[in-house]
Length: 120
Image: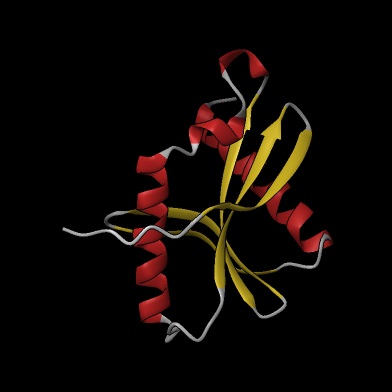
């Protein structure tokens, strides 16, 4: 199985896990020129931008560790675009979570990182 199909399979696993835990999935693989958000969902009144990371084992590090500052900025940029195009102003609550899959074990990191405003 190639990396893309493994990634798709793990994102499906994450989406299923989130649905079982009360998250309404709004978008999958929301892509713009500057990047992509794996899953966008809503938990109660909060919009949640999910990054899904998978590792077969911890030998190369834990999945959540790969969501570094650069990746966080990319996710924030894409989230800004989503919010702008969907009429979600600052009165709407949002957060950034990571779904880390290590082997077959899923860990949900709520508020995995803070919103980063970026400047060009």
